Amino acid sequence: MPGYYDGRYWTLWKLPMFGCNDSSQVLNEIEQCKQTYPNAYIRCLAFDNIQQVQCMAFLIQTPN
Image (tube, rainbow, N blue to C red; front, side, top):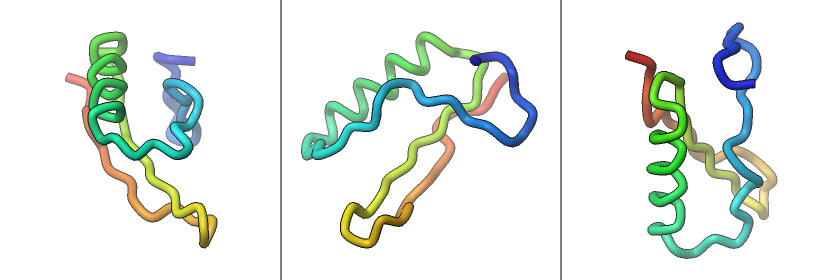
């Protein structure tokens, strides 16, 4: 639920982009998310499908 932030939950923008090999697809999704939710925290996560672990996470946008 966008707009509800209690420090515990993050909602997904869309379904995970499994098998994505083109960085422009990721950047396009980030830009669409930023336009839709200009006053929300937005973060990007990456997972290693072999080890089944999160290998990268960073904030893209913080609320004004």
